[in-house]
Amino acid sequence: MSYFVSLRSFLPLFIFVSLSGCLTTRSELKNTDISRSLPNAAQEQKAQTEARLDDHEIQFRELSGKIEVLENKFKQLQISTEKKEHNFTQEKESLDQKIKIFEDSLHLLDTNIQNLTVEIADLKTNLQNSLSANKNKNYLSSAEEAFNHKEWKKAIADYDNYRKANPKGKSVSLATLKMGLSFLELGMKDAAKFHFQEVVNQFPSSKEAKKAQSKLQSLK
Image 1 (cartoon, rainbow, N blue to C red):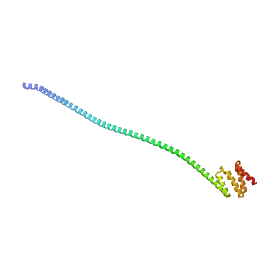
Image 2 (tube, rainbow, N blue to C red):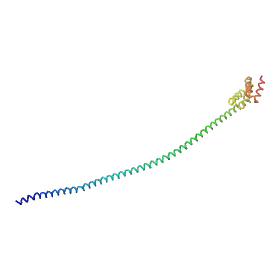
Image 3 (cartoon, one colour):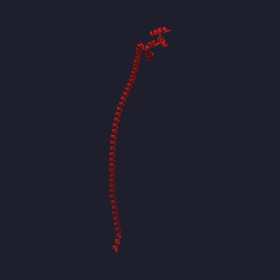
């Protein structure tokens, strides 16, 4: 009986101790699991951070490589642009020189053309004067020849042609006088008087005027 009493008295204590031991063990196990799980989470977080850093480093390297490629392309483009600008400047200078040479040549050509035009005009004038002089000379020579051969009509026509071709010629007074003499030889006194009077009126101080005046007096 006393044994059972003692057992009953001891049983709660035993249960308490047992429960206390169990509680302590579970708590310790829980703490042990927590303590074990904390390093694993930190390591995992650290690993993730390192992985992200590695990714960022790879991206940074890739970006740096792209930037370097772009910088090289930009340098090449800049060199190409400068080279093209230099070539363009040289071509422009060369073209400007060619244009200047062309303009100078054109100006010189214009000057030569103007001078040549003046020379041609002078040649034409001289030629015309020469032709006129030769023509007048031929008219006068032909008239003199006809007059000397007593070809009165031909002499009158050639003298008249000479006067028309050269109205201010030095031999107009002589031609007019001999036209009067030719008309007189043909018996055309009125025509002769007309030409004699013309010599007197237009060339009063000439020797032909004296002869014409003498003929007029003889025809009165």
